[in-house]
Length: 243
Ligand SMILES: [Zn+2]
Image (cartoon, rainbow, N blue to C red; front, side):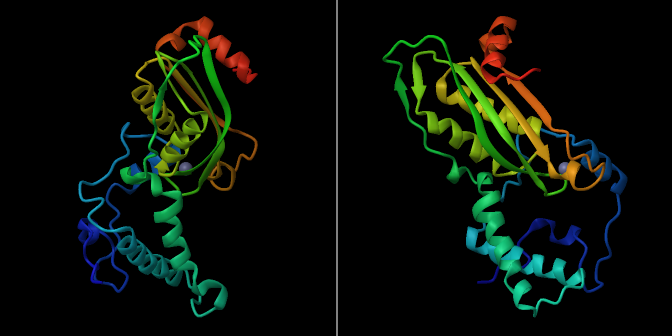
């Protein structure tokens, strides 16, 4: 399988064997965006040719490049413990922690009529959420809390968890993740009346940089009736969050 040289970015990237030196243009700008955790767009920035490669081709390419990173760090890849790491990391990127980049992995969600005529808000709280910071490729670990008021349709409860999980499995910025989850639920449920709160710890804050292990980051998106302070308070009361 010949996949080398496919990526358009290849020529812009530094090469290991001295042909291209590292490009340092806009280095300060990149550092600034990373350390301030700024998202540049609501959509996950993807190239148009993102899915021309199969998962298997991507795993081969990433494995090759990750082996090179380990080599550059001076690690001895002949060691039994390290030998399989490039393949493990590549497979984990494509099939697990970044599987939410591929729209084919979007959960199939069917809606049902709200037969019980339940008209109050439904809250699904403490949804486990594991994501990855797109600035440092380190874990973001936390909980998502979701509420909606049915406009006539409902979804199975576990489907809300699946939507959270799908968007979390991308390189992310927490603000974007919050809005992406809310927008997808609004689309599925055909209502603006959706609220999402995420409370998460960023390993790039706790294990490097400022090294603050106690702080967490809370982001929220309130749509439709949840913009009403009374509804918002009700939601927060259910979560017993003092924010
Ligand atoms: Zn980060």
